[in-house]
Image 1 (cartoon, rainbow, N blue to C red):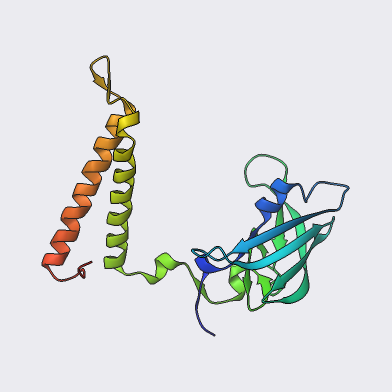
Image 2: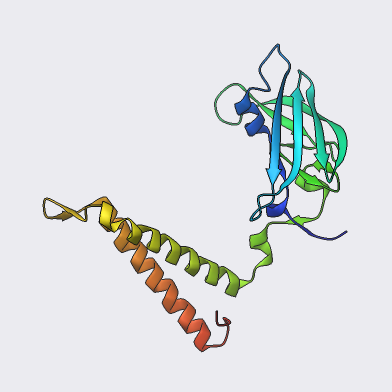
Length: 190
């Protein structure tokens, strides 16, 4: 069985369905949901979910093929405060979960397949480069806002100016770290 990157899968969250109102007591409701491919926006999977008291029926279309799957939903005690929260029951493992992933033509929990998050497949160098890239992008976004923002008020720096200064220092620190690792030939050039 090959390892699947979880971040790229279509995910069905119990909270998304709860927000739509599918798990209200005493009524059966339906909601359409569509997943799109990142980057291209091409539809990958579309589903119509109908919930009743004991579970949810997922009627979905994938690669032109229509299929239907029944997933159990039960209410579990909330870990904070009183009340109950809805959770899925994985059709393969029987474990409680809040998110189901579409793998191999079925919705299953992450315990039913060998999966890794993208961040688990990247080494130290890749994490360092992505952190530096993220910091640089945040700094550039803050710099783009400068014409619309005040940097001082009554002679003191505003929260925006302080945030910009902190982000600039973080970007500079990560840039020095990357330069150091490049000096040691641990990080490939961009």
